[in-house]
Amino acid sequence: MNTANSNTQNNTKNATILIADDDDDIRLALDLLLSANGYNIIEASCTKEVVVQTDRQKPDLVLLDMNFSRDTTSGQEGLDILSQLQQKNIPVILMTAWGSIELAVKGLQLGAGDFIEKPWNKGKLLNSISQQLSHSRLKQEHQGYRQLLSNKPTGKLKNKNWIATSTAMQAIEQLVSQIAPTDANVLILGENGTGKSLLAERIHQLSGRQNSPFIAVNMAAIPDNLFESELFGHQKGAFTDAKQHRVGRFQLAEQGSLFLDEIGSLPLNLQPKLLRVLETGQYEILGSSQTEHANVRLISATNANLDQLLKDGEFRQDLLYRLNTLVITMPPLRERLDDMSAFSENFLQHFALKYQKSNLELTAAALSKLRQHSWPGNIRELSHVIERAVLLATTTEIGAQQLLLDATDHKSSEIILQPLEQAEQLLIEKAMRVTGGQVIEAAKILDISRNALYRRLEKFKMCDEQS
Image (cartoon, rainbow, N blue to C red; front, side, top):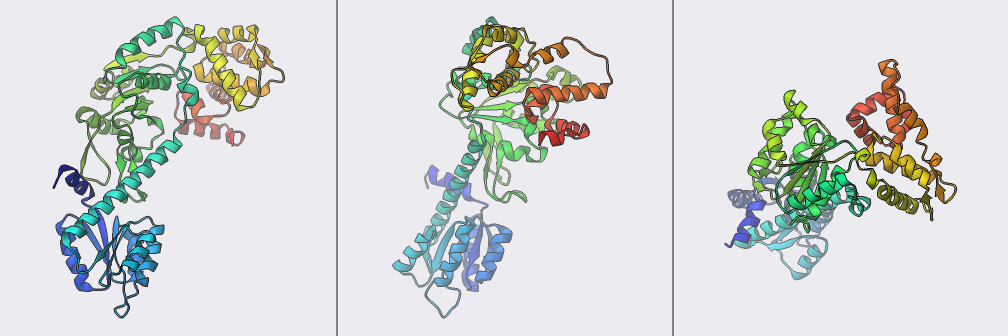
């Protein structure tokens, strides 16, 4: 057997096969043959049992007899149940002792993967099972790709708007040109909204992996119990809600770059699972005993103080050593004011197109006002300010007053002593206002989790306002 065939068959071992036949001897013979070849076997002796077993056990493949009534040879019973199995996306190999070309063609037209006559040829049967399982696995993986990629933001605005004219960003550009062609892991530091994810894409685009996938994952948004499933994937039936195969982020990023955003939020108990794949390049898909090998360039980012997390025992030093082979710190917007004009113009064009407003322009006074603002929310805050100005624009010119920055600047220039709870509420109101009510982005500005912000919104009875 050649290597390709061997790998294909190895990938299908441990699959569960339902043998559906009313003949006890047939089921026993198939059970012995398939069990000896590494498959898990369940059985059904009638059509009703087929329905029950497929609902309960969720087999990977069904060997389906065409005739469950011994006095019939029409094959209609098999065709009827085949239609039901197709609705459940379960691959089927039909079996009958009354083979005919017409019946085989009809079964294949209804969705059966193959057609086997009794008595079967063992080699042919095993090869057919392996092929159908492999085909089914590839189909599920493609569904997983489409599922993940359909949920992935298009990123068109970010991809075409890498701006680096300021002195601070020119230094970043020089560093990126040196490290991007390597495969070294990169850790990006910086405040929220400074463009860390954009820098990660920039590194990928300038690397030798540019023609392979760039996959980003927000570590703070992954529930603890789904961490392994998200990063490493799972097989159908690996846990209660695993109704289909899911492709993990490491597999999606194979031969490309994997960007782990907000890495500082990764809980301590999950850090060893990530450390293992970074140290060995090996991981297992949930529900599979086969070891996979990762070939990705890892880029991570955080606004957290990792040194403080190390001191507090909340972040593993050995994991940090794996992440920070090279470190880049993104400067805040207030330190790259020479980029302000280009950023503002790009956002203006983008939102003018989005809201179907033409010939908009920022006045010199508006640009001056933008340069004077402190920008605690950095580029993300600038984006929201320009979007709001575009929405409220009644003429083609957007002046300093239309930016609505006066009230915010006044409040931020002076700290007023007040009850801590009242100050917290004001900060939350400002963050929600600056981000246009976007909870996730407001939480990033406040440097708290999304759930923590939701709790505070409920506490201050601000939930109804955001719904």
